[in-house]
Length: 99
Image (cartoon, rainbow, N blue to C red; front, top):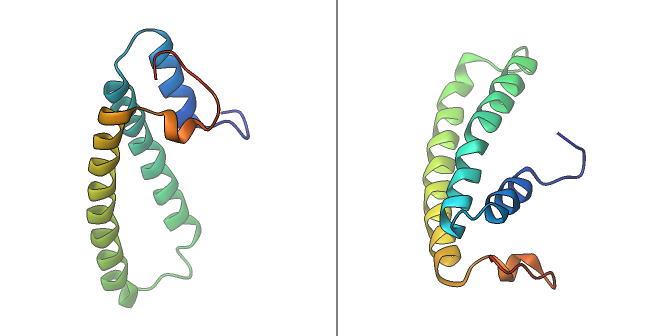
C-alpha cells in the first residue's frame, strides 16, 4: 500500500486498462475491500479491548446491523449509477476511454 493512493481507484483503473467492464471492475474493488475492512475492524476492537465492556455489545451490534444495511443500499445504488453513467462524475476532469 502506498500512502495517499486510493486502493479502490487503483484496482478499478487497473481492471479497466485490461478490458474489464466498468461494473465488474467496481464489484471487484468492493470485494477486495471486505477483507481489508474486516482486518481493520478486528484490529480496532483488539486495540480498544480495555475500553470495551460487555454492556456495550448491544450498542455495537445495533451499530453493525444499521451500518451493514445502509452500506448494502448505498453500494447497490452506486453500482446502478456506475452501470448507467460510468465513473466520469467521480473522475472530475480526467478522461478515461474505458470509463
